[in-house]
Each structure stands twice: as structure tokens, then as C-alpha cells.
Image 1 (cartoon, rainbow, N blue to C red):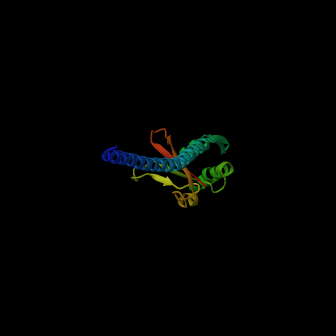
Image 2 (tube, helix red, strand yellow):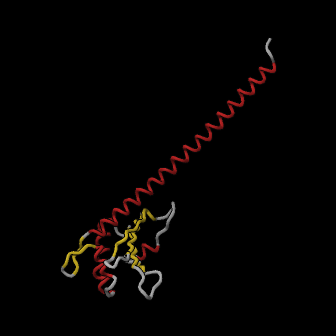
Image 3 (cartoon, rainbow, N blue to C red):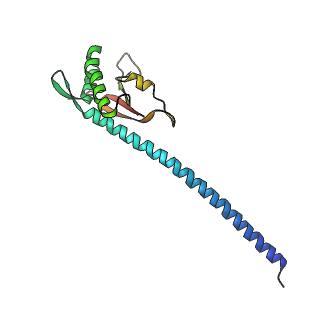
Length: 170
């Protein structure tokens, strides 16, 4: 005859194996489902940051006509620090707006230029030019209008860095 104790022991081993497999499969399903959803969002974010960096680099290398000379926007930004407001509006701001509105779309970009501090400042001089309203209205997060953000550092001849930040908006 069969041993009842051995049969009961085998039944408990079988039930334990079934429950362990069930919970293991549930756990793996949750990990894979949430992992793939997050990875798609993270990948999209990284792609947008790369596109923003690329757009910023193209902008800085683009040549424009200023006072009869062809200069890149990077050199124009370096020169702009010492210029009066009227020069800035005519040359840097208007030409940047014209260039980026044509390439990225009106209202789809914002730039922040930060110059190194001089002797009278501690933190430096960040100009929210040339699209201040767009920069200030940027909303980060899943429901925000920020598509990507990146910065490039331009070195002045004296070795100090000028930071140029760009945001691309949805």
C-alpha cells in the first residue's frame, strides 16, 4: 500500500512549487512590463537631448553677416559681452531669432547665455536672451513643454568659459 505520509509530503512539495512559480512569473512580468515602458521614455528623452545638443552646435557654428563681416554665432556671443544694448538687439538677438525660428520653429526654442563673473560679481552674468519669455515659461516633467535641454561651453581668449544653454520646446 501507499504511504499516506509520503503522499502528503509530495503534495505539499508540488503545491509549494506551483505557488513559487506563480509568484515568480508575476514578479518577472511586472519587472519586464514596467522596465520597457520606462526605457522607452528614457530613450526618447536621451534622443531629444542629443537633438538639442546638435541644434545648439549647428547654431553656434552658423555664419551670419554683422557689419559687413561673416562671423559665427559663437564668435558673435563672445563679442556681445562688451557691446551696448542697441548692438545686441540688432545683431545677436534679431539674427538668432531669425535663424532659430527658421530652423526650429517660432516659439520652439530658448537660449540662455551666461558670461563669467567680473570683479564686481560673484555668480556671473546670465542673460536670458534672445527668447526670455520661452525660457521662463518652460515646464519640465512628463506633462511639461520641455523637449530637450543642453549646454555648450565656449572658451574666451582669457580662458574663462561662456555657457550657452539651449532648450527645445514641444
